Amino acid sequence: MDEGRREGWGTRVGLVLAMAGNAVGLGNFLRFPAQAAQNGGGAFLIPYLVSFLLMGIPLLWVEWAIGRHGGQYGHHSAPGMFDRLGRSRWLKYLGVFGIFTNLTVAAYYCYIESWTLAYVFHSLVGTFRSVDPGTFFDAFVGGHERSLLAVPVEAFGWFVVTLALNVWILSRGLEKGVEVAAKVGMPLLMVFAVVLVARGLTLSAGDPGVVQSPLDGLGFVWHPDLSGLSNPTTWLAAAGQIFFTLSVGMGSIHCYASYVGKRQDIALNAASAGWMNEFVEVVLGGSLLIPISTAYLGLQAVEAATAGGGGFGLGFMSLPTLFNHWGWFAPLAGAMWFSLLFFAGITSSLAMGQPILAFLENEFAVRRGRAALSFGAATLVLGGFTVWLYPGGAHSEFDFWTGTFALVVFALGEVLVFAWVFGMDRGWEEITRGADMKVPYVFRYVIQYVTPAFILAIFVGALVKPAGEWGAALSSLTGGQGWPFAPDSVVGKVLHVGVSGGWFDAEGYATRALVEDVTRLLLTFVFLGCAALVFRAWRGRERGSR
Amino acid sequence: MTTGAWLMLVATWSVVVFFTARFFWKVLTLPPRADDSEESSPRG
Image 1 (cartoon, rainbow over the protein chains, first blue to last red):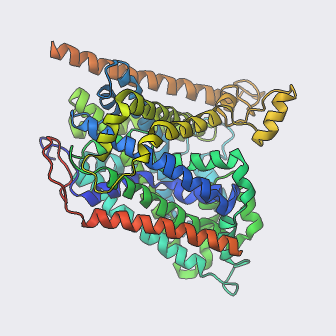
Image 2 (cartoon, rainbow over the protein chains, first blue to last red):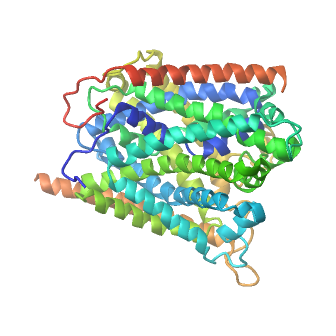
Image 3 (cartoon, each protein chain N blue to C red):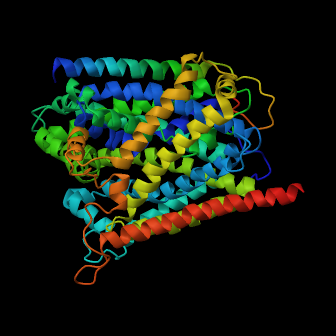
């Protein structure tokens, strides 16, 4: 391995594919279609595209600009980049989020990624011809065990394999590792998706097992219910989907962009990567899961399965069985479906690993190979925790606090610092320097006022999300009955809304409340640990400069 | 599928495909800009 050579991207296409791969994740195929169908269908796309233009694209430009600006000073991770945005010594601690979220999200995300790899294997060997995928999944993650503390052995094995693959690719460096993975993974993902969409949409009434036209499923996703446009829930859902699909608020975009030269374009690259993610999500993701499921299960079953706004059950527990109707093509179809999810996953998890490697390399002079191993070890410990306690809710706690809440906090902080501390004059110059496209001047004001307002709305929405509709919750509040916090609101989570009992049940088994509290404590320690590392790195710098 | 659903699908797909293709085509075809910074930059 060439440790002495400065890291960098080999080609511009590789950079854009890696950035698009970072954004494209499992949610493009599993979450988007369910969210669209449950929030007004075709009408959902109006607030969705508005959010993309007023929040998504501006945030991408802000993150690329912060990244490239930090890279000019040799910083490839968020603490150093934010330290360079203003004079306050506290700014680098906002960058702690860029370390914390990548580490903790990678931990549980690699576990989901490992499921897709395991399902590729089981699709090819024909497991789902004889075993119901729902039963298989339950046994795989250890959900069938009476004790929440039982260890799921096979799942743990696949998790280790997936992690090892990530570490190996990361250790090869940006150009030979991450970029090659993106150049192979992204085209294959699109080819597999196109093949499955083409097969799925051409299913007809005469085919074995088909009970309804797949176009009815497509209609379920796209039928415009315009009444949803006046509902704040629809707008929050659309803004949230845009926010999470673009992988903003993590620090990974900053890291990738920090390897772009000072006078190289970022405006066009960011727009290209963002729109590519939209293509995969809206065109491919919206045409796959629900139409195929509708063809074999019927629209009513699909409506019920996606009622919660997610398509996880359909993707992992229904499609493997439904592919069995496709004869000789069934194992290949299953392998293609889970491979495309795997490529979507690994291109994202690599983007989470690179900022950690960069932080260790830049701030502690750790060599790349050792930095990759350190990332692997930390992810193994944290991810192993979520593998072990998945049935008890550790995984969803990670997802909520690090993969949802922390992202919104970081994004809100970064856009305010960029627009109001770094300043929009310098910020606009940073975004447009070397641009290969004309960035409309109106975005200067969008970034300063509109984008923060969008993120603030998502933040408040996450904080006090009501159980049921917002209008009904307001009526409840004004009627003196209090605000009905949803179990998945921040306040609801803190108060354990919907989770009963103490830490142990009547038989002495650990309860979900115990797992949730232990997980939160762990995440708090990890955040403080990341902050302590930043403190130590800067203290070392100050001593070194004396 | 209803007419409204077809209209939304065609309109949205057209917008998404147009901008995806337009921007990616530019990325593929525009020559790289010379850079004088110390950090490495994409070459192609």
